[in-house]
Image (cartoon, rainbow, N blue to C red; front, top):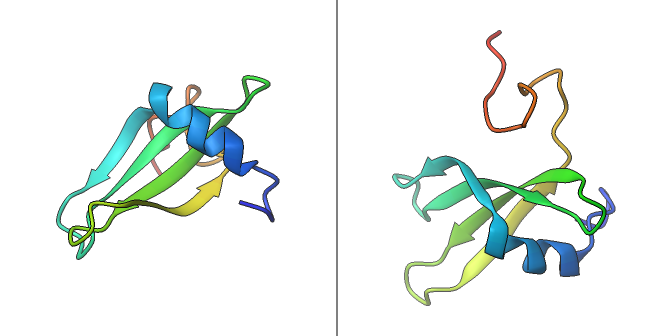
Length: 80
């Protein structure tokens, strides 16, 4: 998050309105890729992981999606 200048507060606040982009339920620790928006309305993706033992949610990574890999709206990957 720090390297991509996505504030932790935005990530925590944005989860309430997050849109699920992809789900990875079969991973050792299930996770979700979600679309969230920062305080200025800018879109970014967060991969949230879930610890099955504790029930905790963990931020795995955050990044700003680009139109080179994502369709407008950032919820559908571009075909390669």
